[in-house]
Length: 66
Image 1 (cartoon, rainbow, N blue to C red):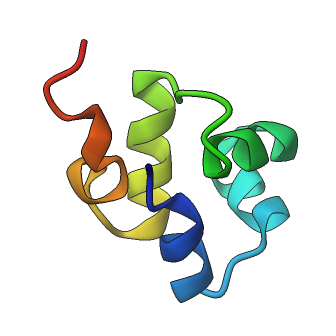
Image 2 (tube, one colour):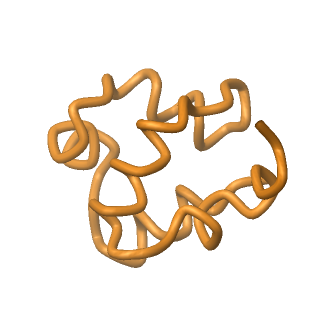
């Protein structure tokens, strides 16, 4: 389970605004938040940077997976 929604809401960002900041489509942001889609490594980096956190904090379940 990722923490994308939690961090996004803490920053006061909508899915649309986060999509604009990361250049990831809003439907994909929703799919990631709902765990319907595992984000690509580059997307994880962009999301973590936009939310001011680390990939490990944002996607703890992804640690150790390739």
